[in-house]
Amino acid sequence: MFTGIIEEVGEVVQLRSASSSAVLRIRAATVGQDITHGASIAVNGVCLTVIGQRPAGPDQASGERTDPAGPSILELDFDVMAETLQRSVIGDLTSGQRVNLERAARLDSRLDGHIVQGHVDGTAVVLARTPGEGWETFRFSIPDGLGRYVAEKGSIAVDGVSLTVAAVGVAADGTDWFEVGLIPETLRATALTDRGMGDRANIEVDVLAKYTERLLTYGRPTTTNGGT
Image (cartoon, rainbow, N blue to C red):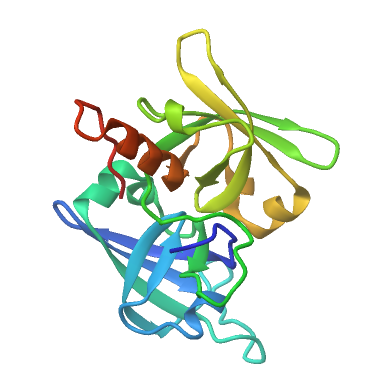
């Protein structure tokens, strides 16, 4: 369980793909400090399990190691199954790309965002990015079948970031869309600032909406939307 409050922006070391799975290696500092084998970390909103960790090699951008006086940099390995590769953008990650990271929430901590499971429902495409006074507005498409779960002033996780839906609507081609406003701190502290027109992002709708629908429609034919 997560809150959608990003702790750190990490860096992809490599994504080693097999026929229907992959092993993802991430370079991180903060989230790796108290992580043990089998722990859960949300990577761009996808809950993944740590299967290995080691001291990091040279920084990919500079070729140098991190300042010894700073926090220890680790490389964390995660198994990624076929369902995750199909439903999220994890399979599109490349070496050097930045990713949002969050450790699993503690029961004795404040819930500063909203309840995020790390079970991605699908991917949204950036339709527009509009600067404003003190914030930027991002418009995303909504994947088929998920529009009914997205409500104005409701919560949504985009690449693992807890955001408030500012507006919803339907495009001329019938595609559902939603907008969110990102303040400078969110742009600074997350990898969403790297997203541009046409880029895909992981989204997780509010789990409370899905359970409410399930309770109201149980026993009747209905279309369900699973998650990763």
